[in-house]
Image (tube, rainbow, N blue to C red; front, side, top):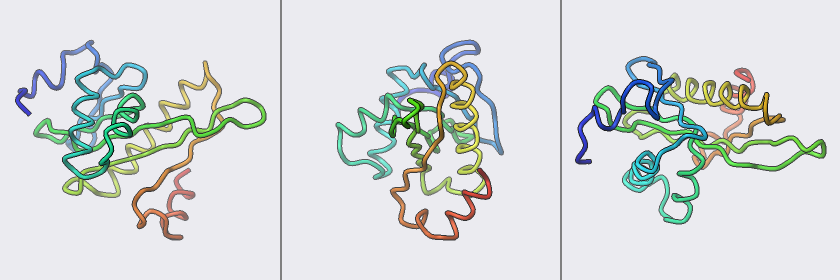
Length: 156
């Protein structure tokens, strides 16, 4: 990628302030503060991992990033993004959540942590912009199985 880890991670108090670690992964909230470089890196990541193959979709989704997960080596391991799914009759938003984790980093703990932190961040944001809920958009057929649905329901 051509950048060293210090450049990628940014400086304390900079655009990636509020970051935290989880089982060796650095989790960085970027909701409403995503930088041009973070967007470019996310687009490269999605294309390299085969998650997205349409440039217009990748460009749009790069503006919708919520959390960035970095592996211990500093490279991207996963991302969450949300888009406006719909508005309820009361005017409140339902977000469409997308989670992508590179195959080498896929584990249930990281998926759940990214989902939980994304939900918490959106819930805190909804104090200013009330939201009605969040819906997981699953591009992976494995996530559409009844067992996974029950698992997600148990974990809120």
